[in-house]
Length: 138
Image (tube, rainbow, N blue to C red):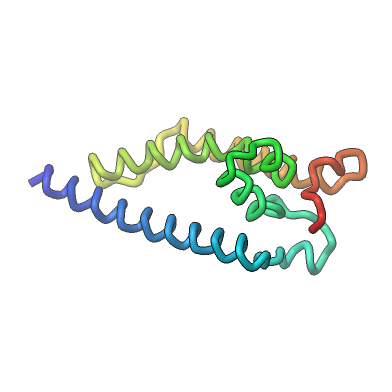
């Protein structure tokens, strides 16, 4: 019975991951073809760069395997992404095996570290001395 439950959880997780992937690739296609992206409401209202500013262009650069351009658009997310992926994948494996979504201590520490990193990155990218962290204007 546990094996059947694991398979159902895996199928459910894969369906959701496929949906997210399809939406992301659809957006990437739309943004690439029409050169239209979702504008950042925080930047539009305040003129400040949020931690996510430039992430769409970063992802498009990653789809072209252009790591340097991706880093220019959003170094903060690019650095944090592997750690987030490690937490996500370990959570997914735990969920499939046990059905539990309880986070391990190392996962919580890593997530809080990522949050602290992104807050620091956000402050720095809005200071004149660190303007190289801001995404290039369109």
